[in-house]
Image (cartoon, rainbow, N blue to C red; front, side, top):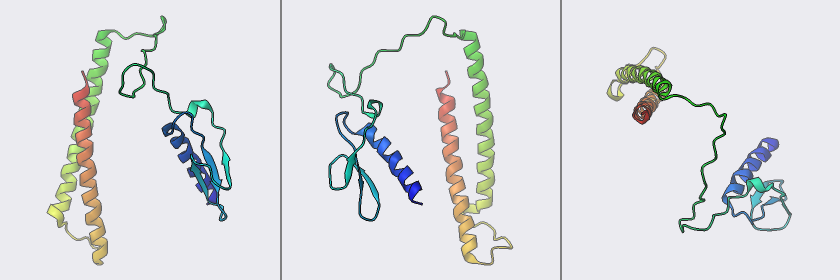
Length: 163
């Protein structure tokens, strides 16, 4: 259990390292009960972590006052494989077909779940003599409907993004 917590805290520290300023030191603190905490302020029983500079947040470059990091596009190597317009159009068409098939499948699934949901009052099954079991299934159906609707929206957006 504690090794799992240590792992989670280490992951949190790595995430925090990208959020804090580049010149900030991260400290690992262990209290009397053995709990580990990562912070950017020094306290008792804290040790400074020696993080590689790659974990530091990127420094803003001069110029625009929006605080964003400006970067030039990376140069493309001369031997980088290129795709012709016809080949790309074929790939896009194939992708669109696959997404449309997934959309039809998801819409069918949604219709089936809604039919079973029956407006919030699905038929009770034989193993649902206990009302709590019935309510649990109704809640699962409601979640499934919500998830299917979100999937349909995402698929429609993705299809709309294809050139």
